[in-house]
Length: 108
Image 1 (cartoon, rainbow, N blue to C red):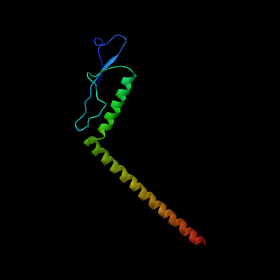
Image 2 (cartoon, rainbow, N blue to C red; image 1 turned 60 degrees about the vertical axis):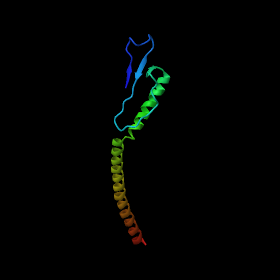
Image 3 (tube, rainbow, N blue to C red; image 1 turned 180 degrees about the horizontal axis):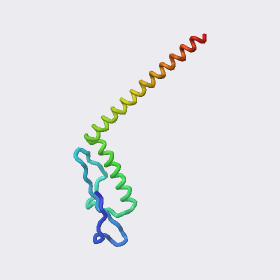
Image 4 (cartoon, rainbow, N blue to C red; image 1 turned 90 degrees about the vertical axis):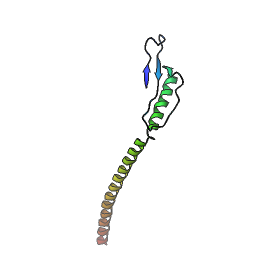
């Protein structure tokens, strides 16, 4: 959770953000840690820090049980579709190859 601090809390000409993290159950902890009190000035260091936090947050969700189950099911379905396509195209290839072989045999 990121929010811009109100005008009362700001120093004129400078922008600050208060940052907090919440995650769904089952999502492992991720970093970088938020230093106390979780207030950052809007600058390049904050931008780099928040990007690291967001990337790590996304990666952490991939390790949650709900996501891994869903990804496993999707992966199995895609592999099944690929093998079915390969089998059908392989059968077409085999039958075409056999036709060419028989034509070559007749030409001899």
